[in-house]
View 1 (cartoon, rainbow, N blue to C red):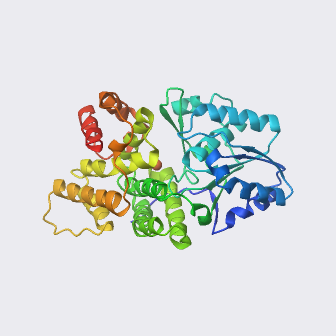
View 2 (cartoon, rainbow, N blue to C red; view 1 turned 90 degrees about the horizontal axis):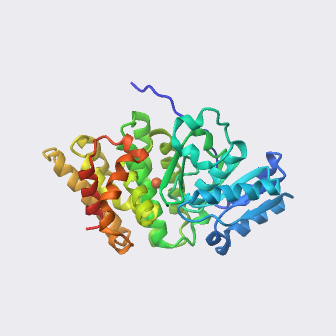
View 3 (cartoon, helix red, strand yellow; view 1 turned 90 degrees about the vertical axis):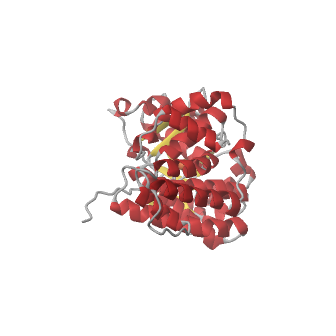
Length: 387
Ligand SMILES: [Fe+2]
């Protein structure tokens, strides 16, 4: 019998062109001056201009902060907050991909709480007296991160080590999901971010927090991405597929806030920290071998994921065979259907694999993996990714 508690607090404005309504939305909240956080690529693509035009049309003042960097270094959260405070802004828009939304969540948290921001990555003790951070509007420009719906903030310290804040207090108040913003995203970015979204749904289903109700959502989100990501990848202007991806990515983000991810994300975060591997690619490379690794303890769940990729099972397969078949189907989708480049084409150093394996075991999402992992096993997974 179904028996559950679910949380979804983000108010969603969904539809092609809806980002043009953001000015009216801010005005309706009785705010006067909005801080718009983004990166230089979004400015160059002309997307920031559209948001600024909407804000101006509503008669509001604004400050455009375009300094946010990939991998979300924490110092840009501190810098952004200083700009916001000096300008006297009373509301915040996060415009961009995962790093931008995460950094802006951190900026918004600092509006209501003392810094430094990294102290909130240290776990529950730092949260004892933390106040909620309302007033954030997220406008994603990729369909992948899910950060617009999640309780997560992944930011990097000065040593590029990725740190995690997990708390419902950081969640956006509104998210505007506009598929028109995905037109012009290069195919390899569309593919890698889409595989990030897929990994949120698949790893959510293969998380030890999974429940019957989250299973329904994770499986629907994963099926939709497997169907629509190749369509969007092959048609640079198709809005229907991009809308479907935006919706599925939001479902994945919602599930991040409920069941989190498994060791696939632990490995992706560590490869991002140690070798600078972009997050979507890290997830795309980690999900297949981690799914195979977990198959011996959750064969039926693994089989269900394989069916989403079109696999058929006779019922006589061993858990190991199920894991191998599902891994191969995922790799085919990634490398053949979406033509993703290989992990070894990115910068890496095998001499640091041991250090990376040690970090994987300490990473936050490791807690939610069905199967315990030791350092030797983490090392073998990393070696397989770069083989
Ligand atoms: Fe992710």
